[in-house]
Length: 89
Image 1 (cartoon, rainbow, N blue to C red):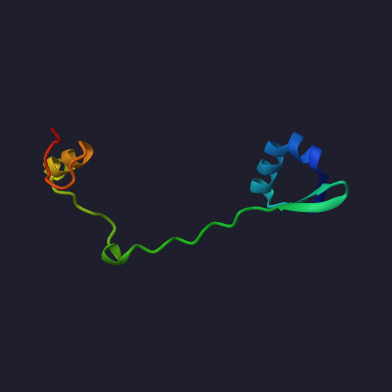
Image 2: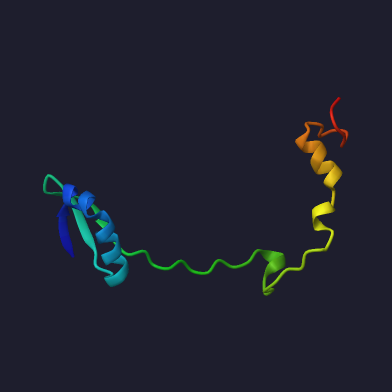
């Protein structure tokens, strides 16, 4: 684990990130000789499970008329008439 001052860390930040990602090396970043932060590799996140109805399914089918479903109501909402489902006059 290497210790760097803040100025060097800012100057070489891209190289530090690349090195951390490639080698897993960790860095301590210090200000005025005092450790302030630690640059470490990110561990891969665990795969998030699917929500209830999608659990165990690898694909989802969308109806052919999906874009037309409730188009009038959606248009009404965009036009500002959420109560009547129609356009404001």
